[in-house]
Amino acid sequence: MDSKETEAHCGNDVERAWRFWETGGRFQKMVFFFFCLSMVPNGFVLVIIFVSATPNHQCSIPAVNLTQEWLRAIIPVEVVDGLEQSSRCSRYRLDLVLNLSSQGFAPGDVNLPDLPQEPCVDGWSYSRDVYQSTIVSQFDLVCSDQWKQPLTTTVHYLGVLVGSFVLGQVSDRFGRKPVFFSSMFLQSVFMFVQVFSTSWSMFTICWFLSGFGNISNYVSAFILGAEILSGKIRVLFLTLGVGLGFAIGYSMLPLFAFFLRDWTHLQMAMALPSLLFLPFWWVIPESPRWLLSQGRVDEAEAIVKRAAKMNKVKPPLVVFENYRAEDPKARQEKHHTVLDLFRTRNIRAATVILCLLWLSMSAGYYGVTLNSANLVPDPYLGCFIAAVVEIPAYVSSWLALGRVRRRLCTVSAMLLGGVSLLLLPAVPRSLRWLSVTMEMIGKFSFAASTNILFAFTAEVFPTVLRNTATGICSTSARVGTCLAPFILQLGLFSKFLPPVILGSLSAVSAIGAFFLPETFRRPLPETIDDMQQGKRIHCHCLVRKEKTQTEKVLMESKF
Picture: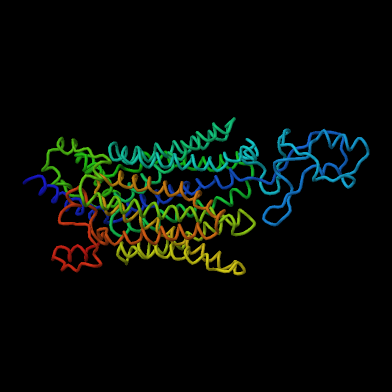
């Protein structure tokens, strides 16, 4: 048979083996719970909320002979947003104050606003009411160096962006398992090294490398789980498992931060859990789908037979019979790169649409998340509320993906998030509770969209490009992440701009989902030909097409 017929048979061969090794389920349960647990440390990456928090501060006053009255008066009072507060970046000139004090003058005897001021030449004193220490208080990232504080977060997400782009292709070339465990190790090591940072530059470089490993760990675990698991348990992992694992870690973060208010102790506590997963290298297998795509049929069969033994099922002597019909060396030579995502019309259209959806989703998610610090005065409670909202979002996305078509799931979630933000400027200031509710509806929708788009992307692209495609889409998402803080800054010109821009972007991009191929209850494509055969990217909601008998059978199957 020719190569196309062989690959078509191979696709059926893979699905038959997947149904076989799911029997009994012990192997799948082990893999499922391991990957769900491995997602928990990824929620800790938001530790930057507390590590880079800016405590209340003012100019430090050296030990000089001043009365308590002058010590209280030496810091000027400023009016910010209609409220009076002590200046954070200036003080009255110390030499003049000392001279006035030595002459017997009290603060009430002079016109203080007329006195010349000077910057905090002796450093700053920081309040410890909320935080014992942060990188802001340790490296003095305030006043003239305040720009370094938001840049720290931006650099981290640049690391995430680079990791999304690079390691997705590395995973498709060298395997899911090595990238998964190496990136987990990389993330933990550099988070741990940050504790010993002697400068802001050293901390930021380590934070970049930690972000590089974090997203690679997340994406590799997602793809590895998607390719090992099958049927309903795969949908359960891609939606509820991945989402709840992250949300549990995210929800635990403010609890750790509440008790560990020194940033070095908190950072160390967040770095160590990932190392506990490294011994599972000898338990978790490589993706058999990836092995088959590389022509390593014997290794794939060994994994399936091992799973069968764990499930107490007797496997056939030859599991992937049709895969042996093709020359393994020829299959190994078929290396794919990111360029293959733009080589043909179908794949190019799917790539562009999904990248736009990921960018819009991420911009909306982080726009609402970064603004959630203003929900309540207590930052720990605010973070907890924003985290807990994600749990029902992931449960809802899991229920929807098990019963509703992928395009409808995507459009509904993106539109709900977009509309909730578009309506936000219309809420009166007196109804603060309604504004908070609308923001959390947006957070709910964008969190659900994250799960839906991960699952949709994994099902649209073939095995040979799946991790590369997910990495590219994740890279687009990181662009949205980097844009979110700048979009929020537009609120300085008009409070309506950020929600209108984020809401419009989400609502408009949702239309693109109508032009993606439907993947509900269909087998994962193994090759580019599987994705190409008879498939054109068009608006299915406008074109009625009679299903063939083969399609009807596929729709009724477990996949």
